[in-house]
Image (cartoon, rainbow, N blue to C red; front, side):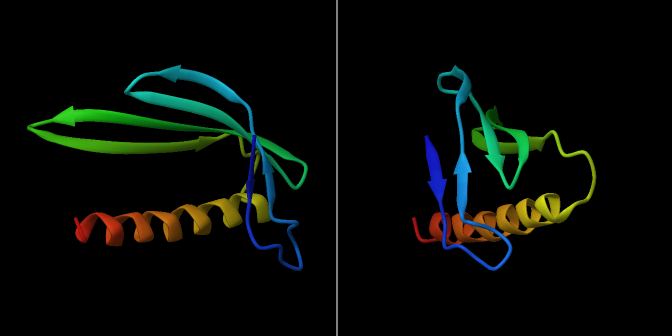
Length: 89
């Protein structure tokens, strides 16, 4: 499957992915291939004291490259949007 975002001067906006693991309802792991870099994203849900915690892990970067920094900033932006959405519930 693919994720698509608005292209920029340094990125075509396309992320190619393949599901690696699904352990319903606790874990989802998939490849994240873009700009010549192949990494892995894993989402994990944990129950704790009546609450659910979400852990995101994005691994496989060789260095703090343009791809690493783009992913880091993108995940922060999306986490902020998720937090805003959940606050509305």
